Amino acid sequence: MRRDFQFPGGNSTGCVLVGMKEPSFESYGKTQSFNSGISEIAMKKYTSALNKLLADKRHRIILGDLVLVFFAMKSDDSNECGVFSMLLGESAEQQAAKTDSGIQGVLKTASIGLAGDAENVIAKSCDNNVVFYIAGLTANSSRICQKFIYRGKFGDIVSNLKKHQNDMHICDNRRPVYFSDIEKQLISPKATDQVLPPPLMTSIIMAALGGGKYPFGLLETAVRRVKTDSDEEGKNYIKLNDTRAGIIKACLNRKYGKEEITVALNEQNHDPAYLCGRLFAVLEKIQQESVDGTLNRTITDAYFSSAAGKPSVILPKLIQLSNNHKRKLSEGRCVQFDKLMGDIIDGLDGGFPQTLDLDGQGRFIVGYHQQKKVFFTKKTDDGKE
Image 1 (cartoon, rainbow, N blue to C red):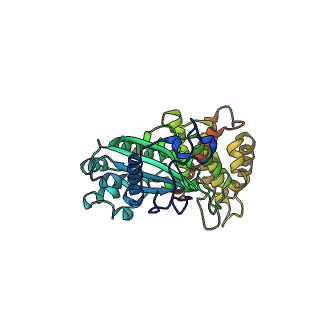
Image 2: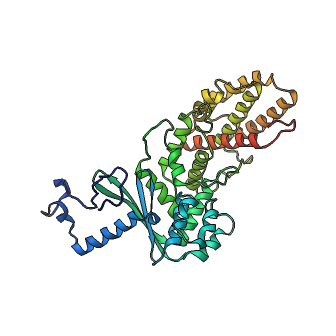
C-alpha cells in the first residue's frame, strides 16, 4: 500500500494486505505470499482501488483505530457517501466540501437524526436502491486487517442507521449519537491514549448497519463506566449523561426485542431494578434540597455503585437517612417526596431485590437517570425544580 494515507497504528512506509512471515501461516509447501496465490493484474486492481478510497476523504472516515471505507456502485456517489459519513459522525461543515449543493439541506436534517421528511429528501437526492459497500480496516504495525465488510442497499442502511439513532435517544435529547460519541463514553475520562478495542467498535457498527442486537461488551462497558467514573468539579455528567443512558437503553431494548425502556420516564414500568433506580434519584434529590450550597460528598458519590448491585442492602439505609434530611424541608415538600417514594415502593411489592445482574444494573441506571431528568425539567407545586 502507498503512503497516501497513514493508518492509525500502521507503518509510515506502508502496510501490506497479504503477508506470510511465519512458517505457521504456510501450507502446501508454499512460502510467504505464494501461499495466497493471486495474479499481478488482480493485485494491482484491488490495491489501486483501496488506495484511491483511502486517499479520498469523501470515501473514508476514522473511528479510533478503525478505518471505514465506503462507496456506492455508481459513477457519482458523492451524495450517498455524504449522507452516510454524516450519519457516522462528521459535521455539516466537514461535509460541505464533499457533496453538491442539492443535498446540503438534508445533511443538516440528518444531523438531528433524520427528523421530519429527511428520508423523502434523501430519496430524491440519493439512489436508495444502489448497492453500498462498507469495509472496516485496522493496522497492526505493517499489516492491514480487514475487520468486516458490509453490503446492502443504501436505503436499507439509512433506515437501519435511523433506527440506531432512535434507539439511542433518551429523555428529551434528540441530538444524534455518533459512533465517535459512543467510543468516547466507553473510555475512562482519565485515560490519555486509550482507544476502544476494534472488535467491539466493529460489532457496534455492524449492529447499527444491520439492525441487530448490540454486542454484550457494549452494555457491560457502559454500565462499568457509570459505576466507576465520577463527576469532577466543574465537569458534570462525566459519570452519567444522555449518551451513556441511551446506550444502555438501546442495548436492553434490542436484546429483548421490544421497547422495554421508553424514551422518557415511564411511571408504569414496574420492573424492580428500574424502580430502585428511580427511588435512588428521589433520595438524592431530598439530600440536595436539604443542604444549602454544594455537598462535598453526596449519596451518589458514596453509594451509587453499591445500590445498583445490592439494592436491598443500601436503599433501606438511605431511606432512613432521608428522614433526617426531610426535617430541613418544608412540610409541603416532605409530603410531595413521601408520596413519590410511596408510589415507587408500592410498585416493588415484595421489597428490594437482593442483587441485580448486568441487565438489572442497566435498568437501575436508566431509571435513576430518567427520574433525575424529571426533577430538572418539571416544576413542583411550590415552585421548586
